Image (cartoon, rainbow, N blue to C red; front, side):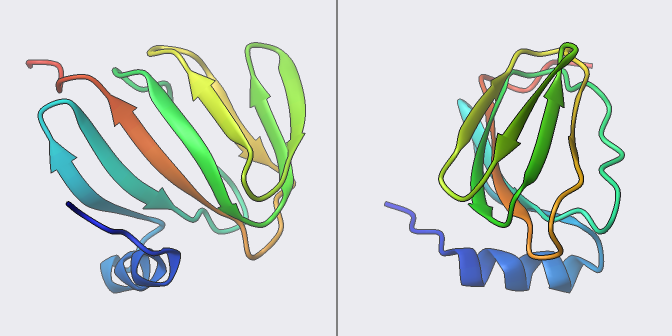
Length: 105
C-alpha cells in the first residue's frame, strides 16, 4: 500500500525546483502532483489522465469548453487532447494520474 499526502507531495514539487513531481510509478499508472506557477504550459499527453484538484480554484479548458473548478473536482482527459488550467489561484495544485502503460518510443 502507498499513501500520498498533499503536504508531502507539495514538498516533493518544491524539491524538484519545478512545478511537477512524479510520486508513484507503476506499470498501470503514474501518480504526480502538478502545481503550475502563473501559467499552465501543458501540451497534449500520450496517455489518458485524471486530474483530481487538491487545492485552489480556477478554470479548466478542454476541447473548446471551460469548466470552473475547486478542491475535490475531477477531470478526465483523453490522450492527445488539448487542455490547460487557466485563471487559477496561487494555491492551486492537482493530482495527476496517468492511466495505462507508458507508450514505447
